[in-house]
Amino acid sequence: MLKEKKLKLERKQRRIKRIRRKIFGTLRRPRLAVTKTNRQIFAQIIDDNSGKTLAAVSTLKITKGSKTEQAASAGDQIARTATKAKITQVVFDRRGFKFHGRIKAFAEAAKRAGLKF
Image 1 (cartoon, rainbow, N blue to C red):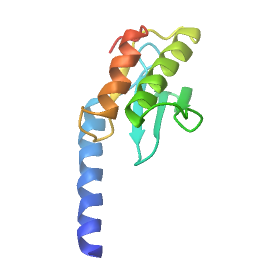
Image 2 (spheres, rainbow, N blue to C red):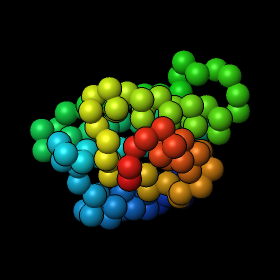
Image 3 (cartoon, one colour):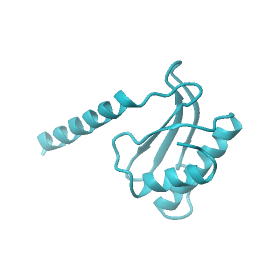
Image 4 (cartoon, rainbow, N blue to C red):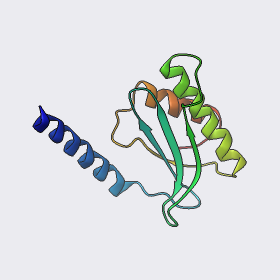
């Protein structure tokens, strides 16, 4: 059991590294990194040149709706926060997760609210 868990974690780390080789955020077009757990979604807009987080949001304080609806609400929030910080374009980093379910709901809500990927 322990070996299987370790292999799964190693595979995920390889996926993340493979994606990060291609994705890099700048001040003009920062990286929108989305991480998902079984209960929550966390997102940050990051400038990789300086290593600073420009905006962040999570579903910790969002209690209404299903997990997918909470993810969509978080996507809307991050887009509003980004527009206040004068960020219109981002590079989407899904951190090795498949683009479906909560990740897809988050991304589509952010797009609807005005972020361009």
